[in-house]
Length: 149
Image (spheres, rainbow, N blue to C red):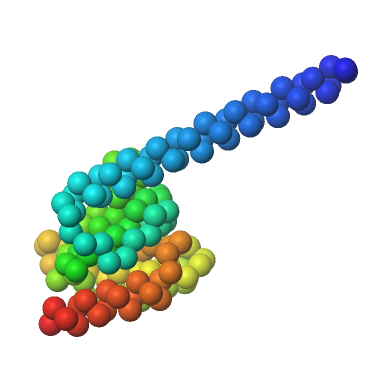
C-alpha cells in the first residue's frame, strides 16, 4: 500500500468516527429535549408534535437564538424545547394574535410557520419555525384560538 492510500484511508476513518459521534450527540440531545417537554407538560395532551423543527428566532431579538428542537401544541399553548442549549419557549394561545405561512421573514428562504403574539409586556412579536408541516399547524392553532374566543 502506498503512503497516499494510507493517508486517505485514515482520513476517511476519522471523518466516519466524527460523523458517528455527531449522530450520537444529536440523538441524545433530541431525546433529552423530549424528556424535558414531557416533564414540563405534566401529562397535558399533545395535539401536534414536530421533532426536529428548526427555530429561526424571535423577530424582536437582535441576537437570535436558532436551532432544532421539539415543537408541541396543546389545547392551551405552543411549547418549543431546543435540543441544545437547554432553552424552552412557551407561547400561551391566549397571547397568540395570528399565524401565517412565511417565505423569508427571518432570513430563511423556505415556507415556514410564523406565530404572531403579544409578549408579557404587551408588545407585538413573532416566532418562526421551519421543517414542520406549516399549513397543518396553522389550521390547528387557529381552530384552538377560535374555540377560546
